[in-house]
Image (cartoon, rainbow, N blue to C red; front, top):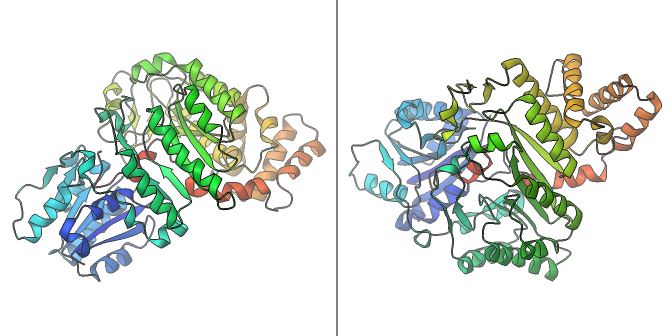
Length: 504
C-alpha cells in the first residue's frame, strides 16, 4: 500500500473513526490506502515491522493524549529504519502547542485541526513529487456535505467485535474551558437523511452497538428524536436481536418531546452519558460552563424514574476554584439523584484548552507528562489530590464495577463522599496498591472495613456474599461485561474519535 493510516488505540475494542474518515476521502488514492491499528502497550519493533512490511510511501499517525509517548517512540524507530518513508501526523494532541513537541520534530509533516480534505490533498502533493517546504499545515474546515462519510470502512470484524463510533454532528456551542470542544465556534449537523442511510447500512451488515461521539446529542430535539426513532424502529422490528445506543447529553436540556422518546427504550438498549462536572456555580462561572444545576438534578432523577436508560454521570475533580468540601458536596448531591454510575475524573490539561489561563491565580500544577493530570491547586494540595486519585480508582473497582451493588449503600450510608474517602484511605493503607487487587481479597477487605465501622461481622459477610458468592459470576456482572464496549471515556472521551481527520 502507498499510504498507511495508523494509530495506537487504548484497547482492541476501540476503533478510530477519524482514520476511517481519511480513508473515505482519499479519492483516487483510496485503493492505495490501508488502515493499520495497534494497541498501546504493544511491542514497538513489531509495529514497525508490520508497517514497513507493506512498503508504504506515506504513514499517517493519529496522535492523542493517551498514545503520544508511544507514538513518538514508534516514529523515531521508523525514521531510523526507513528514513525515506514520509511520516504525517494529525489529531488533537499535535494540533496545539505544535512546534514544541518532539514528535512533530521527528515527523515530516503535521496537520492541525480538520484534516478530512487537507490530508488527502497533502498526500497527493507528496506522491506527485511536489513536497511542500513547510512542516505544519493548518487543516481547512470544509462544509460537512463535502466530506465523504466513513462507515463503509468498518470491516466485518469491526462490526462483530469492536465499538462502532458514529457522529450525527461535529462541534459544540458550549465553552467549558477544560474541554477541547470549547475551541469550536458552534455545532454542525450532518444531513440527517444521509446519516441515517449510513446507519441503516451498518445495521444491515450486523452492527448492533452504536456509540455516538456527538458532543451534545440533545441540542436539536427534532434531529435527536429522529435518530432515537431509528433505533426504536429497529427494536420493534427485531426484539430478539436488539440494538444498543450510547449518547452524550447535556443534563439541563430535556424537553417533553425528547423525554417521550427516551421513555420508550426497553432495558439494556440505551446508555446516556451526562456531563455534570461540577455543581458549584462559582466554579462553573470560572470555567465558562453554563448549567442549570436544579434542572440538571431534576432531569437525572426523572430519567432514573421514568426510563430504562443506563445513566453514567461525569464529575471532574481539581477544577480551579473548587476545594475538597465543594467537590464532596457535588458528589453527594449526584449520589442523591442516583445515576447508575458516577465517573469520577481528575482534571487533565488538554493541549489548547483555555483552562490554562487560570494557572497562576489558582496555582494549578499539572503533570508535565501525558495525560497532563492536575497534581495540585491552591485549594487542594498534592497529598489531598493523591487521595482523590485513589478514591477514583477504588470507586471504579467497587461502585462502577457493579460487583458490590448490595454492599455499596452500606458503605456510603449518610455521608457518601466522606465514607467512601475513609474506605479508600483504609484500603490503600492495608494494600499499598490501587491495581491488581484480586476480587476475592477486595471483598474480604470491604467486609473487614464494614466490621470496623461497627457492623456485625456475620451481617457484613452476608451482604458481601449476596454480591460476591465465592467468585460466582452474578447476572449484573454479566450485563456489565457485555456493555463494556459502550462504556464512555473520562474527560478526553471525545478524543477517541478525533484523529487527523477531525476538528481538534
